[in-house]
Image 1: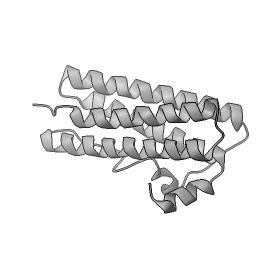
Image 2: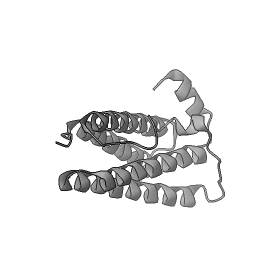
Image 3: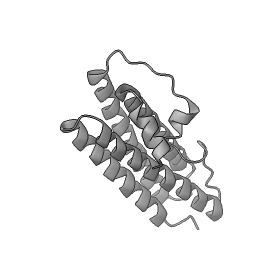
Length: 155
């Protein structure tokens, strides 16, 4: 994560940081859902469906966190805010081996970016249960990223 991004996060209200995280989880769930629908094998469909469900669980947990700690917050996220947690295009094609590999790289990069984002939030926001939650989220992002690069492309 660049110093410029770290500076942006330092100056961002905590409630907006959580709003960015919610956005990132919603895009991840959407992408995995699309990949599950387009999967060329039952194995790929199952992998992406499971990942979608995990991301939806993260999104629900973050929304609950926002409602509990920041009940009156409301933000419009800019493209720059969204870039904190998303890499590549929103829509990914997986129609052949080459496009599948490209999609996995975009998803890996997004998971790594989001993991870095959660690590930085952990550093900047109150510790305790919130810090543990943010580090758990970061670790899951890194695990997802690594697992994406290990998925064999369709034959």
